[in-house]
Image (cartoon, rainbow, N blue to C red; front, side, top):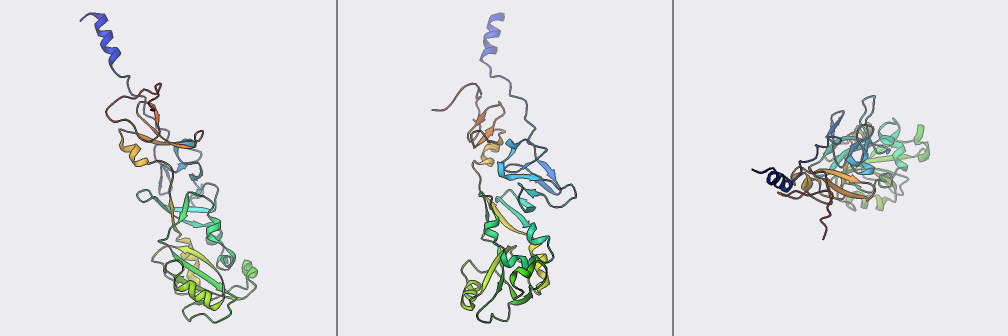
Length: 262
């Protein structure tokens, strides 16, 4: 075959795929596998995950912290977009049961893309009641340590798995109590006031919803999930080196130098 004809045929072939980007391969932190939308700060570039989902490994081996927050992660469930975490202000203080009398968990979760799961049960702490609470509410003395802020009054613990606005809330309203509620894992047990610390340290469920469909990106011919901070948008990094808004093209080459938008 004439050399010119060979060159013409070669010109019609797509370029070789770009080298595989390994900067965001799943990383380990303790027993957790870290991948999009999370990223491991200090070991992965920020584009590997959503900005507020950076994870800091603890050199002492404690559960990792999430994005400069007070949340320590115990588990990550990528299949249903949820994590199990506990709040250090409640779990690390031996008098934290009393501290929780002035604690609002909802306001403590400032990461807007994380929400407290409705699957959680609730641990209620009530005090300064106008009427007596039912016998199943366990008394807790909050006259010591950081609990002095609770006025030294007797508070009560109750574990509920009712829907929000259910029986526990009605009993609190009827007794005219001050209260706070701490989410805990479903299936928890409260038999004595001393069980409080264990319940809180087991954590609670949080659910996330971030832009983009990472599973669809990965299923579309080897795409890798990324976040473009400059555009504040999800991107699918394709084997040809192009960044697509959702998925990689199937069965055809996409040149990163060409715009395919309509």
